[in-house]
Length: 95
Image (cartoon, rainbow, N blue to C red; front, side, top):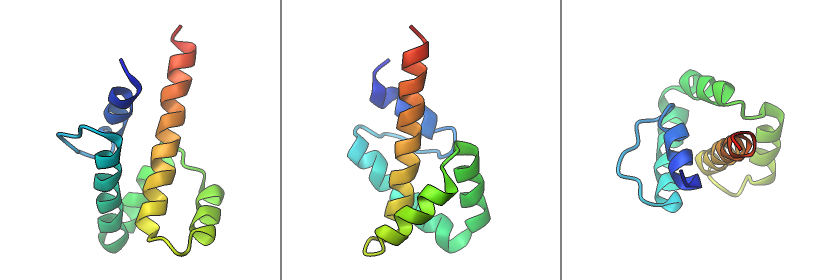
């Protein structure tokens, strides 16, 4: 399975995002999802980030250093980055 399919599969454990054909589109949908969660259900967002094992201190640093960007973009990028790390780890140990 290629990396994008693996990434999509992992993301779909937290979000129901369908018909994603590229990483760019996946990112856009995740930015929308995190923007919604920031405005409407921050505890659910925190739960997703906790279960995903996004490093809280690293995320705080990213939010501060990228204060010119919308928070949802920074959070989505951190989430994607962590999920990509999982894909790589699974590839490494599945051989």
